[in-house]
Picture 1 (cartoon, helix red, strand yellow):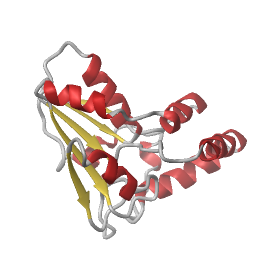
Picture 2 (cartoon, helix red, strand yellow; picture 1 turned 60 degrees about the vertical axis):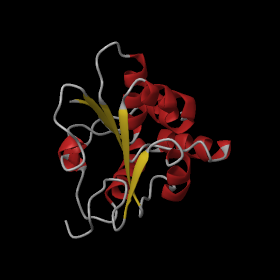
Picture 3 (cartoon, one colour; picture 1 turned 45 degrees about the horizontal axis):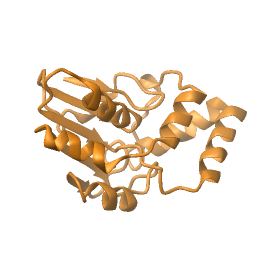
Amino acid sequence: MNYFNGFALKNEEDFFKSYTVESDFCVAGFSYGAQKALEYALNSTERIDRLILLSPAFFQHQKSSFRRTQLLYFKADQKAYTTQFLNNVAYPSNINLETYLTTGSHNDLDALLSYIWDKDKILELLNRGVRIEIFMGEEDKIVDSEKSFEFFSEVATVYLLKGVGHLLQPSHQ
């Protein structure tokens, strides 16, 4: 499987073993990595049978002031921003993501926040025979799961999981 990490994260794919498929023909990505996974699948000449998007970072419904504010907070105090971000990613679980932390850049955050999901791109992959599955948590504190579900459910199979957030892990962990 070709896996794409979330923003400021590394090696977090173990959290998603129950949602992914070990196959040379599968591409998966978490959050920011979901954006990268979609673009990779679109531009790849390799055989891809399945694209799995885990809590795709979806912000295109936000006002431009939201993006500017996030970038300002990140630039002002990257450590504090990242700590709060990781807490929101883990919610409602109490999983400590410090060991999965890597340096996230201002450019990566800007790309994540300004990415526009295009239904035509998704439809192109579907027309190529790629099976697309999207998993998202109902209690997500990173993205608006309702808006995200509304968008993606028009073009793909979407699973809206109750009792989990962005990391797709239940609160008892």
